[in-house]
Length: 497
Image (cartoon, rainbow, N blue to C red; front, side, top):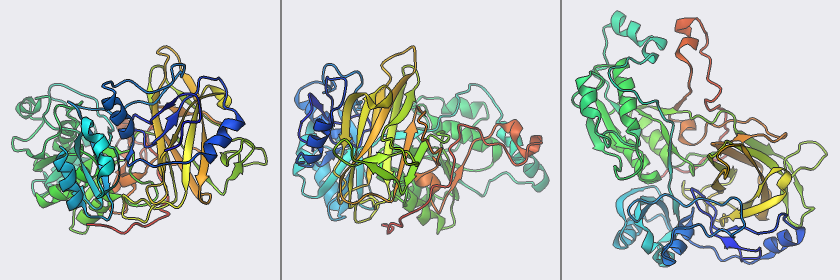
């Protein structure tokens, strides 16, 4: 963790994967402060992704942000439920059995393991004790993101049924899907209690099998049930199974295996974790590959991020401020400041990854270390906080989440990417969730990543039903908000069962 060398220091929070965030009260970030930042010693914590701030907040008997008083914006704490936070813990030597036993003894529940990862709900007041767990390499908060369907009530027929001409197939081929069980992964199925009405209205079959329900004490919307209603429209005879995607990376991955074990021949999901790797198969992708080898067909929602991503390859570095900063300008000019606009009152998340192996995915870990600096306003003028995790030998990612402090107008922030240790990465990729990249050097790159981009599965984009071949538009016209593809795999991780 970087030493506090700026005025005011706080720990990274929200979904943040950063371990240290510092905010200063001055309106500008001086070159001298950046030079000090580069030279400051670090003592890495095992707690990442905002767990370190939760630990500090728990000790202080408060859940407030540790931001400096004059900071206009600050990161957000990871969500907690009844004193627990969902975490992904990475085993030191891959022995997840020993790590799971140790974390369970500290109060962890809903434990799942897959590859090197142990996921589950961990008590916030025990977080500091994780620092002394020798079986633990590092742990971070796990935040599930879903691509929401619009809620409906009463009997509604999916317009997609005609768009993909499933109605025609049922009539002409006399099929209903009765021999093809379909598994669904999302947040929850019947936490809100609407499944019985769905059965009565003919929106659902009466024999849905719940392999694992979502965590009903969390913020859920029963999106799994909405997905099942769509499946039931298209294949009314298909047996349906549900497993929550919540509970961390390992629970999602194991849920894929569990659905296949329960008989699913097709599996669909509309969820992902922000910390899944971009350039290699993470453990969820590895689980997809496993069930594909067993004959299961896997579909995943591509996402709703459009082209709010920027990639930089063979870029220059700006050293004018005392440490290597990514130069986003491909010309001879220098521009190390990247601008993003947040909608009124909205929360946004930025994730940075680069072409180095992820320990959590079975790789050797990164050989370099990058960090992020966030500023309020244009042109990197008003420094707010700094985010960095120790990446050496760990995962090649960093990021933060923050919110627009103004409910009635958009707000612009700007970002710098600093190289702190090791060689310059060959490729960098950032994706923005909940905001829009407005920088002149935006590359409008792909946003289909993680397991939606897996080799064993298929990512599914969004199209308005009247802009499909059935209604005269061929090929179907993809919605502008639908995530775009062609994210290259730079690394191949060894699959871990």
